Length: 453
Image (cartoon, rainbow, N blue to C red):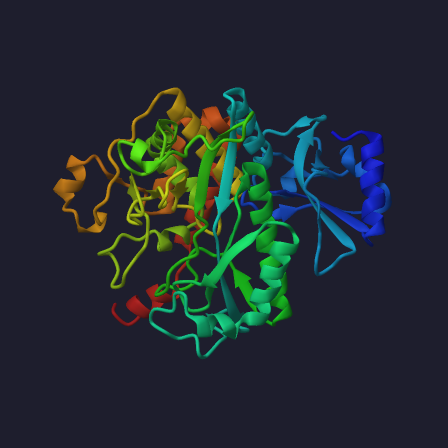
């Protein structure tokens, strides 16, 4: 908590920049920002938790109509003045109840795991690769790629299609850099209408705050172009999905040294990863099936995570609970040069705080227990026979949301990490989502069956 003089100083600095309103934005179980708008004159009150919320009105906060209200407390170290609406200051926030951190707040859950890492002398660095579609939506809700020239079968890195949406891309890139996130690359991705923004990693909490804000920003700038930006995992059946790859490493809290990095010559497995890094991966693999529910949290997520052979076109889908080097058929990759591991399961629907809390906890368990993940898998795993795959001990990850939630529910690690209430809330909402999905009759079913029978 900031001192009164520090809060007053922040308030004056914001007023000098033209800020009139503040939003203390926490997220619900889905990672969607929620919050009240407070005039800048009341920032002191807001900073002390003046803004109260009926938790029953929100998804995943575990409250009933007769429960006392929760409060939100803004993080005044991560303020963003909205570039497109400079009168408004955006502040990520944590939920509290009776003045204590609220355990069903996913940002609070991540901070709890960061504190556990700190007890072991570790800081957690996280980089999230943001993939997003820029599309036109028609009155009937259907989506299409707005640029008629963006129609290559393999449009990845296509310079012409990139320039075709330069106005939106320039707004995004300029703002990312103006915010100090250090954008180092952007490109046209694997699908028509799809783009990726890569900016520097940061500590885990900061990266989750940034990814949450980025989704809001992308949608606002798309609206200015008469388009929509969607991070939906799989908006088109015949195109690649939106990932949000998690690039993770631990660093020494005293020196800042990357504890996963070493010369590949000093690594018996040759990937440029320390034993600590391999143990972290071992924990991720141990709980890989349960983690899948957090990384890929929607029905639609599993339209992206489709096994090759179950569809007529190429897939990058990480469906194997395994790791390797630059081999993208593994769910966990150690990119060239080492020093980090990348979980490729995460998609654009991820609640970054929720997933990061679980991933970090799994990695820390791997370190505490000295889990060896085995040899890196360098083959194209889709080409292995079932017998070869089983001999290597490589298991498939869940193939739909129901399987993922079953694995999530069955793993005691989840309860230990999140607490019973947050675990149960996630299961409740995701089972409801799965059941609702199956109660709907789709256009595919009508087309297939209405004249067949």
